Structure formats: C-alpha cells, structure tokens
Image 1 (cartoon, one colour):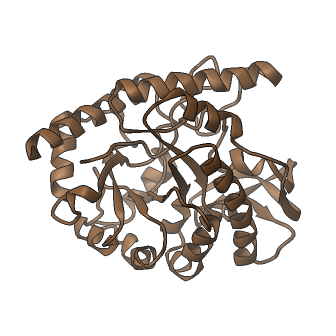
Image 2 (cartoon, helix red, strand yellow; image 1 turned 180 degrees about the horizontal axis):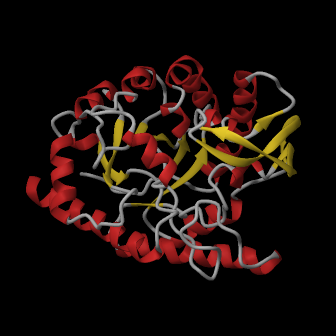
Length: 339
C-alpha cells in the first residue's frame, strides 16, 4: 500500500548550482558540469532511498529548469535571444526562448541521467518530462502561430523521448502540466489530448503531475487570491479520468482543494500531495498519515500514492531532506494504522 514518491525536482547542491533558486546558474562548464550533474543525481537517489521512498527519481539535477531542460535539446528554438513573457496566465514574468522554426529533437535528451538512475537503484524508477501545454506556455512562438498546433508538435517530440526512457528501463514516465490549472477550459478541450499524444505507445506506467506551482512568491500570492475552495481540478479531471493516463499527481496538503474532487479520478492511481512545498516547516509523520487518512474517504487504498505537492527545487537541501524523511515516516505510519 501507499507507494511513495516525489513530484520531480529536488534542490541543486551548492557545488553544482546556485541554491534556493528556480532558475539557478551552473557553477561549472563542459565535462566537469556533466559529471557534477550525475554526481548530484547519485546523491539524491541515495537520499530518497534512505528516506524509505518506493519510487525513485533523478531529482532533475541535470536541468536548470524543468521545461528548458527539455527544449534546449530541440532544433527550431532560439535560446540566444530570449524575451520576457508572462507565463501561467501572466501570473509572473520569465525570460523564455523563442520558437523560430520547425521543431525536431537534436538527439536523446535525458539518456545519461535516466540510465544512471536505472542502474543505481533496485527500486521502481520515475522520470519526469514537461507536458505539451506547459511547454507552450513557457516559450515564445514566432513560427507556428497556433498554440494547439505547437502543443502537438512538442507532444511528438516528448513521445520520442518517453519511448526512449521506457527502453532505458524507466518504470513510470510522468508529464508535468501545471499549466492545466492556469488554462482550465483549454486543458479539458485539447490539453489532455496533447498529453495522450505525448504518451502514445508507452507500455510503462504513465502519469501526469498537476499542481498550483512551486513555493515561490508569485505562486503563493496567486493561491491566496483563489478563495476558500480551489475547484480548478473539477473542470478537467473528468477528461483525465476518460484518458489513457494511469496516474494523476495533485496538490492537497495545506491547500484548499476539496478532497471530494479526487472522486472524479475513478479508475486512476492518485499521487496525493502530502508534503507542502510552499513552507519550510517539516511535516510530522502523524500529519502525513492523517492527510492520507482523509484521502482514503475518496480514493481506494490500493490506488493511493503519497507524494509531494510539487517539486522541492527552490528549497534548501536540508529542508528537502527533512521533508523526504517525513514522507517516508508518515507513509510507514499510515501502513501501520491499516495493518
């Protein structure tokens, strides 16, 4: 019961990149940087195992940002002339690359870290990729002129990498779609379809992560404006329930998401956010187990997968490790309660 995992990202060690930043600068170059990325990946594999987690990720240590880590390996994108653009429905500004021509992969994107992950743990592995809608929202389109057409172009490339990750031995391929909560109607209309195109042909487990964003000020301010009930999930969960995607990761602890919305995901595994990424306060095992108990009113125990609300990338390393340990201990306690 309660197969535990993280949403995706973990903090960069201080010797690899700037700390506690969402877009950190690397502290090395060339072959030295590539080795440092893999060393950091090994560090976090061990930390997850030590915390008792069941599904292990790479912590996205080889990516400066979860979207740009993929698109920097795509032809047709200009990183030299970034422009400032509002993203996530203009929630905040970011410097983004421009799409200037037909999109094609330059080659494999995440082969080295995926193969290292698979070779370095005997546990199940999960690898994360940005979802098509979220990529579209994090680049400036100067070529396709149509968000849907651009999303499906990215979906084809994501599918190529996802199939290769599966061949590398990855057990779960997860697509991250925080943009779903910003563009609710579009998510239900074509976002889920683009997501399914990205997952086409996969025989490993497929997942999607949909949260309310990293624990940065712009996202926290936005969440504070959403009122007493956050019902965004209600609009597109039915489309996900009808899709081929097998697991859905959602934000829950310390949020205003009504727990009954999880009932809309009947037939899916629910990766339940039981660790808050917007606070440095460490959850107690009892708090994690209580959060799991609340969700069991709406999700069968065999389908519940305790997780973090979102990535931990902007947090300090010490806080992130403590939260991983809280997740592991809380899940162990929840199992004891139901034994």
